[in-house]
Length: 139
Picture (spheres, rainbow, N blue to C red):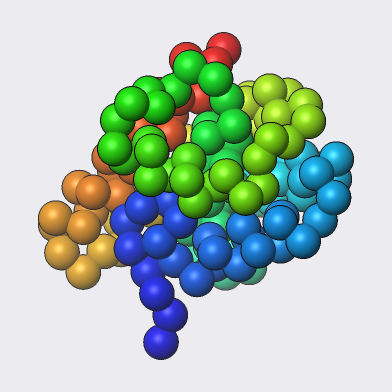
């Protein structure tokens, strides 16, 4: 049974993404993220079949964590940034903001839909909202 929670790095898939990024040279990480974030844009129907929303949310969180200007003083962001710290900084991360924004818009509904309780669904929606807010602040 896998770990799965409403935070951007609260799933096995998200932790696998962080491990994969950490194992790569820093200058190749943006390309890995770009490829992952581009998949739901190219094929939205792949969500839930070949690609899972938690992986995309994690990739968006890496991008958002690497941007200046997010609310680093908030405990939620402190926790998110702490988990992403092992793969940051990533050169040219700013170029991924439009792709991350588009990918998050596609996966936000599936990410918030299939939780076992309404409280989890609200928490997942809050995660997506915070990430979207951080990305929009970078534009």
